[in-house]
Length: 258
Image (tube, rainbow, N blue to C red; front, side, top):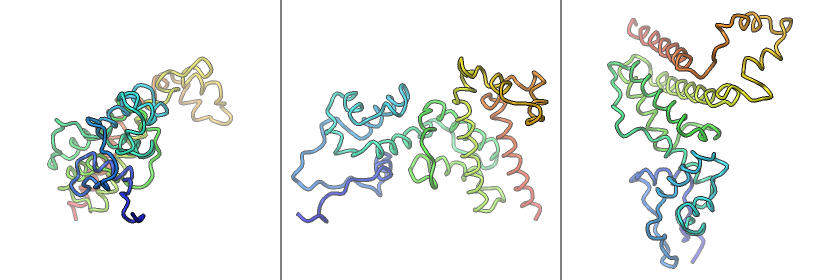
């Protein structure tokens, strides 16, 4: 058989769409010579096992061999479903981003409340699957569940006067904000109060900041009321989100006035 007749191994993005049951990516036919997948072994089971390992032990603990062992099979049996850890991680990331099944649809008439609820759901997903924050972000979302969150945000904004371009900008702005807030929450120095070397975050700053070089920080932190927490409380999260939503509301009002 010529090279052009061999079944091509799907990429991670293609696998993510296949895992979501997208009709535009049907299973590729075999060439009639290779045995089929192990009975009961599916891409969904592989991804679920991999996510369970990552949630408990971190992304570095995930390998095809480790996932195969968790499923009671051998590594080679996974190759008919996924060929590399890189591709597996793409599918894992998208599966971890799946919106809750009972999530109510966005209400464009109450777009600020809807966006706030959506953002909180995404924030919680990062907290449940912190290993996702280790993955670099490059380019726009291209997998089904990640795109679905953008779809929910766009639906919430659909009755505002924001242009289509500004709606997309809003989605990008909110997505970046919630990711950074979740990252702060899980930062060891902030989330765990530091360690025996650095102490807590503000204790660490107290050792390295000097009034001659950082006068504003030193004046700010001289007041104990300003050193209780940073970046990881609900108040911190709501503060930034409210500022973003207030800015979008102002833009909407400007559109209504024109």
